[in-house]
Length: 341
Image (cartoon, rainbow, N blue to C red; front, side, top):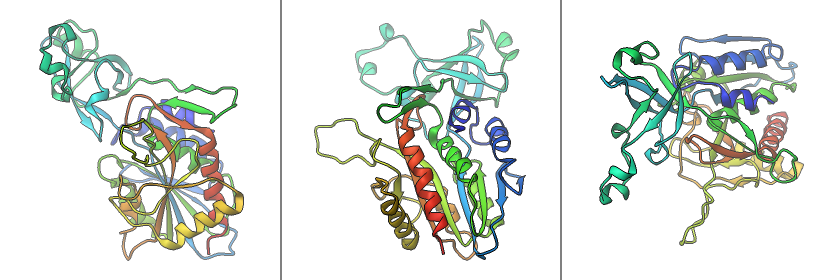
């Protein structure tokens, strides 16, 4: 399983190089051909056995949310803007890596002792934060970083349940959507009756850009998007159901803000889950968006569906998912593909 390597790789939207290299190494021996297009997508073909004329695409995005350096202050502190949707609440005091050399830094804010009472009850906006790399001047900082450098959270992949006695929980960054990429790599290990196109897409977090290009090129008959979706299980005073739950199996999207899933594919997934006795869940409708939002509108339209590994604290420095959910997502999608007609 490639989840650890993919999670620890740097790959902010538009700079997916390190993640892409890992993916190419992982799939090279499993596919008949692959290419990297002009936007940075990896599009691979695994030929079928000839018994089906269908053309099926599986998509998972390589990019992660992160930052770009926008200004270097005289003091050597770095200003930045966010790439993708990151909650400002999770930023202060977080460790980051900057640029290809992974220069270490810390996101800094005004010390609590110097804040007004009103400030302490407010979320600090990202334009009030800086990245501190320990440089004493602009000149010193410019020897290490430059304008336009990307930065990402510096998070180690950790097994929280190494004995495998529970959910087999793991912690890491960028599970959205390196978990989907790892699921897709696993699925390429099986044989299928039709030609299967694996699209590891770029720039999903800034507008589903890679998926739009990949779907236009492949022209699939059906598409499955493999994702990692939010599991909000923090207790509240109100009786509010979480969008998904950890440890309760793959999450099937019926509708989100970007698309409405094809009913036939939803039925296929549910039937396959029941056949394999896999516990599945329906993601709360109307939340989020995935590559399916771009794929289903390609050319004359593509019947699409999204299947996700539930994950706590996505788009943050440290997320948590269950490897049981991960494995069952692989099983569910594989069985569904083998029964797709």
